[in-house]
Length: 158
Length: 158
DNA sequence: GTCTAATTAATAATTATTACTATTTAGGAA
DNA sequence: TTCCTAAATAGTAATAATTATTAATTAGAC
Figure: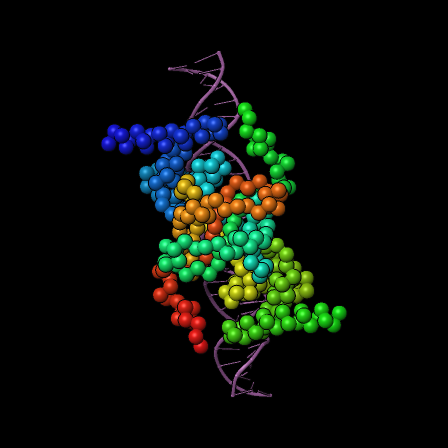
């Protein structure tokens, strides 16, 4: 019991450290959202998290939850599922291809790479699902954005 | 000139065939949208396509364009860029993982597969972009949906 | 040409996301 | 501790994307 609590505390403290590193104030709302996120399964939307938090924190606003989740994504506490939150985009390219996505300008660029086209599908997946398409998403910073990025990204010296 | 035109016609006729196979009527609107899509670069949104079509077809409605594009995606004339069009979803899973997506119920399931974690990044991409994350998306039909799918999907005999 | 089910235009309704502003608060300095 | 200030929040409004509705039109089979 005591041990479980302290493990949980360590995980938690790590996030608190991240907050401080990013000059984010530690507010009860952020703590509540963090706790909710850490105990989430699957891929919740802002609204799902908002509804859960409201139970213990009735007058938190949706905006705070949404904004905070985006902040968390910014500082790397959680991820945004690829593509979601963007307007629906159509892809008229009928040749087998893969996508590079820029995290900064959201640009999506097609690229071709045969090795990726013939990737093997894991057995347990193949048994359970009927796979129709395989796509690799590379996420990062594109050439146009990289220059405007701080040097700390490429230079890891203090 | 004549040759180019007939190649274009062949490509076009293939799509017309797809229309007929799917019992879709061939309307001038659909032709216009098809032409616009086929000449599109990148990953246009419904609105972008709508704006372009309006120039040659001023009183087409947005709804028609949007609905038709979805229909095209249904019959496989084009794709929807993975994830787009969906509510933003957060991913609290901090372990390296990949996604299976069901095309029917939109379910996203995490899975783990080391081979995918250590995929090589093509040289030309590595030179141009600063890659931070690699993710494989498997698209298909999930176990829960497969039973409600027509047998023609799994049985390719006439 | 006639008929009918499918399609469309126009618009309304719904839903997601972002923006705004007055108020409150975290956390550093005295 | 108390004070101060920049940051964060609640509440709400605005914007934008998507889906639904309905009356009118039309493609394509006969």
